[in-house]
Image (cartoon, rainbow, N blue to C red; front, side, top):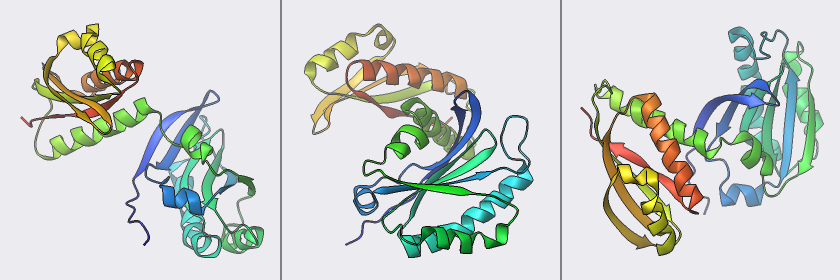
Length: 248
């Protein structure tokens, strides 16, 4: 039975080789089923016609490139079992990244599908990539970028319920550590001296610990707080597992 997959698209502004870059990526692209079924990377690069000074598209050209993408996605999925994982725009070009299992005839398909976009030139390449390293190492946000994305989603939800985010309040955090020794080291870290501990339990994923303090949920403040916790948890072989706070 095919797995039920909810795609989760995000845009991240970053840099690639020192140049501004816009990365649009499906955070849920790399399921086991998808990776086993599609082990070849196919990427299509289209130079921009009128890039801005920072190498990114204008609003108008971004709409044109989105139309190109819409013309490709469903036919390539049907004909080549191609799964779009994201696209990167930097240094005057946009590159679309797919993983596929049926590369035969791809050039003919692209010539047909892109015939209505004759203003653009394009080139593509196919590579064997069963571990999807381009997705994980290039397209997908770093753990710190992901944390900021998740923070912003929480903050947006709070604002939708009328929270102005101005009042400090109790913020609960969670982290996982691989064993009791690392848990003790994490709890003894200087950063954690500013928190109170609510509880801990052993799980299949390691030791889960909950801790809290009264703090600001202004975006810059909560980003700084959670990134610091993420780094400390990683330093002890664990991972930071997020936060929550009551609305005000």
